[in-house]
Length: 219
Image 1 (spheres, rainbow, N blue to C red):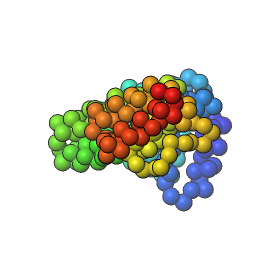
Image 2 (cartoon, rainbow, N blue to C red):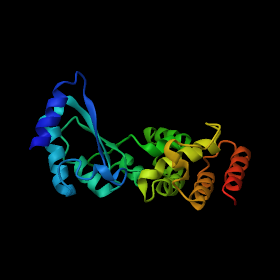
Image 3 (cartoon, rainbow, N blue to C red):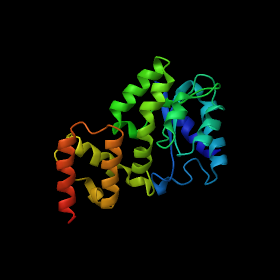
Image 4 (cartoon, one colour):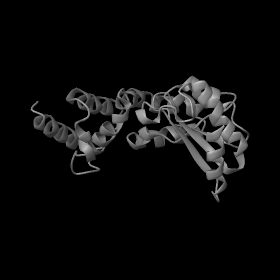
């Protein structure tokens, strides 16, 4: 296939193993047909051909399709030594925990927003404490699914809003006006779900900033 030849030529110029990224069109509609086909099964075959033919040049692949069954099936077909990095912001706890046949490494956008919980959960997993791993991650899933809900390409609005609530930046403005890409109720639910997951570093500051944003929006 032409796509395999082109990518192979690029990989041949790399002096260190790379991480490929299959970013689904839910993140950017322009990425539809990214691997040469709109059919995801055909696209997976093309992608795996590239990986198999260039395994020595590839550290792993990150798949961001928000489809855990498809990621697991793909993971089981990878050549030995090539890692799967999950980009599934809907199903990450089970994908990272894995099964008898393997697991996915964590390389997730949502980890920016849930860093404290992610750190605790991964430490618990490393220690073999699966109960704590699942307990810490569980309340973050609802937040992540909300932040990455359709239209998924506006997920950054939720991530940046939470960063603002937590005091990591002095304002809630984004390039291209993306701070206005989600309705007020979406922002309110980011606040509510983050609180439920214990992810508001300074609740008083978060409440103050939440009120300011809502007042700015006339609410």
